[in-house]
Length: 208
Image (tube, rainbow, N blue to C red; front, top):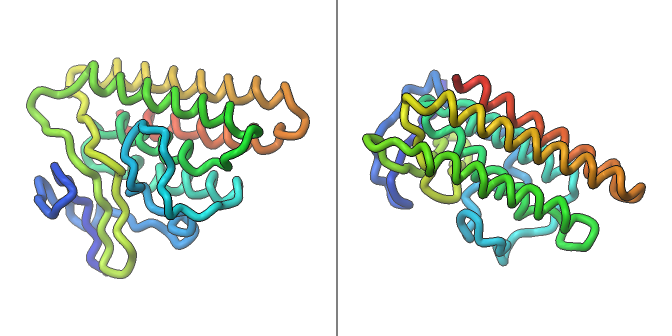
């Protein structure tokens, strides 16, 4: 078995707070890596895209978001970090949508949901656990990580935080579907994005 580790780090260096046995860690598949890892340079919520990011098809971006969120956020051993991990991946998705008028509304909806999810984590933050960079390390593949330190939710608030997060995700999905209905040209793409966003609620529900 290849050496795979889930690493919690409180900064961008190799300061390790916790190492989880390989049984709990999965590596990104090549398909997810094709659209870039979540370690994008601009960090959370700036609305600025990485200068070196190559254009990707919408299908590739959706696939990268779905696979990446499931493998990183869906397998983090401590569920306290799940809500804000999903927030970071929503920002990842918004960063990589095409930069044109057709997708501007989708980017706005997803960015708004990312900020709301991050706010849920902050409002329910743990006072005993530190924010941490989530990093998935594999000896045979490029490491993947969140773009920033994610906020852990307090144990006694995780149920309420998950419920609030699921509601935010469902609202974003609904807004995307409504936007899809307003334009025949973008209907297929927006519907696909909405489905991917909606499916991320399963990650939140499974973390309970």
